[in-house]
Structure formats: structure tokens, C-alpha cells
Length: 270
Image 1: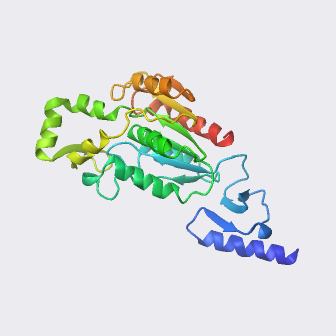
Image 2: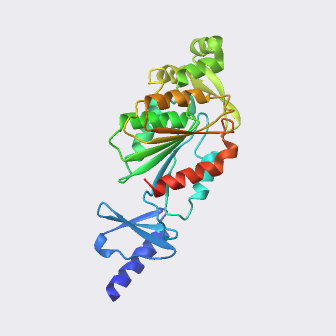
Image 3: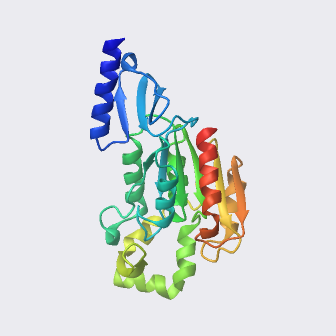
């Protein structure tokens, strides 16, 4: 017993001094704690988490931010704060991929795949706007992965929407000049984006096929950026998808508590 306690103290000492929110130990060295830390065993690996003992079945959440945004977006920060000290590992890939100007949907999908490869257990993906579209594209490619999706005003049919936003003249100018300036919300300034982004975007399916994967959409009825109709079309093609329409705009600012509550419920009932 004494050696087991000594080993537990050693494990917790290493854990406290590390930057990681998770520490891996052999199952034979595991002790369970009822406060401050808790241990989760899954697939013969034991996970010791900061926080109180919880009844979460899933401990990994991937958040995908929207277009011209960043991992430091308002929704990302709110979700991170909500699940702080609850034993949920938050993964937020930077979809600017190091250089917003030259990024593409394909590069973003590669970044997402690279980050998710490091997760060795079930997870959920929460995607906002373009991030919701990317979540569905990822799920279409990886249908065997143990995941569920929560899509917030997802940007389906994004190629057509860009044409609607910029007009034919704007798209032609983008192609002719090679770049188009977009307001990047993270920097609060306009940054040029290569036409390759648009060309690559239009090669991808406007409504990904994710049959077999459960998804829940939250979309504002007053969304004048991405119309709620695109979510309804997506649901018609993917019957395991449910839609919750709120009295809100594209930002879903008034629905943030609803969003975190839905995420919380799915993490507990995967």
C-alpha cells in the first residue's frame, strides 16, 4: 500500500509540473481520486485529469473556428472557460494554418486531421460557420472515427455563398488580381486571401455525406450570412442530423449558454 501511495504522489508531482492537461500512467499504477484530480481508464490507458470527478463519457472536444477568425474567438474562449477544470481536453486547431493569405480548405482539413490523429479515444467536433462545414467534410472522410458533431450556423454550400457575398464582379476581380482583401476578425484589419482558396473550396462537396454519424445543428432564424435553409438541405441528405433553430443571428451571441449546455449533454451521453 505504501509503495502505491508513493507512486501516486510521484505521478501527481509530475502531472502538476507539466503543461499537459492529461497524464498517462500504466493501469497497474492507477489510483482513483475523488477531488482535485480524477482518473479515467479507457482502452487500457489511464488518464488523470485536473478537476473534479465527473460523469462525462467523452473527454475530448475539438473546436473549429470560423472564416477569418482564430482559436481565440469569442465562442472558443467561452467554451474553453465553461469546461475548464472539468476534465475535458479542448483541441482548437489554428485554421489560418500559419498564413491566412495562402490557406485553403484542403490545408485546413490536413491540419484538422493532423491534430485529431493525436486523440486516441472518442471525441466530438464543434464547428462554427466555416468550421461547421469543415467538421462535416472531416466526418465525410473519416466515417469510422468515433465522433459526434455539433454544428453552429454551419457554412454549407460555401462556394455559392462566397459568390453571393462578393457578386460575380467580386469573384472575377479576385481571380484577375489573384488576391482579395477580407476583414480578419482576429487582427481587426483586412488581409489578402489568395484566389486559390476559392478555387479549392469549390472542388469540395457543398453538402458532405456523413450518413452514420450523429450531428446536431444550432442555427439562428435571423442569420443573414448563412441562411438556415442550407442546414435544412444538409439534414435532408443526412437523416441522423437534428436541427435546433433559435431566434438569433449568425454569431449566435444570444445562444451561447444553449450551445454549451448542448455540448455538455452530448459529452455526458455519447
